[in-house]
Image (tube, rainbow, N blue to C red):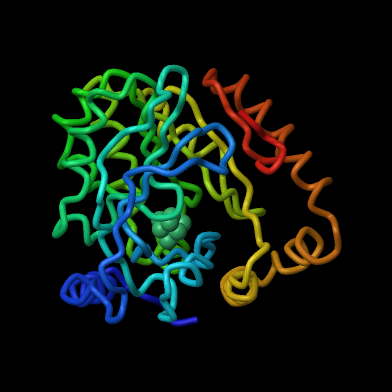
Length: 292
Ligand code: SF4
């Protein structure tokens, strides 16, 4: 796998920013939100089709099938044109999640500015607003975020090594930038959480990530790495190349049915770390079983 350096990433991002609109997509118009199929949220808002963060493990990579894109995932992002900015009628007690299959603050957002308009709408939302991102671009909208009555922002970070992060999440903000983002949000009174996602077996260092974010994350959420899509081969190739010593473990978890036992061990690690570090943990390790 080619090792993509930061400079190369920046240049590729600039290139994508020049040509984010792809041909043949017509003038499809969207409603601002849709009903959520995810645990712990009722509605979702995804301001783009596609995500140029291009994470190798992205479970949303199948979305191109539904939006008519045949380009590789991570190479396109189109701002949605909305025909309605109406919020759901039922709001009390309902969570609306921004960024379930695309990162709302991916690099093209600097150019298209979808989020300020969306945040303006969300100022009147009477339920809970949650935003999940891997980008420090969210800080651009700090003043708007502060005006939303019930909000929390999660910053996803599951890797401690810049080398791994650059290969797996090539155009997301760097590790330091993400931690600084969390701190700045927290210092400005925005409820925050660290989202350790995905938890990479043998690679994710839960204690270290918790330590790094201590004092500016209200809780730590943890989600396991799922390898159920066409991206499995790419992730396994990454492990084989960068962490060959872990290949037997990955085969055991993802090919030989050893997943349940492994994640049970991680669950125990979560409980220990929670006690030790005195910060609440929320487990999404059995994601598919969680229902709001
Ligand atoms: S930031 Fe999220 S949506 Fe975007 S490519 Fe990465 S995992 Fe997928």
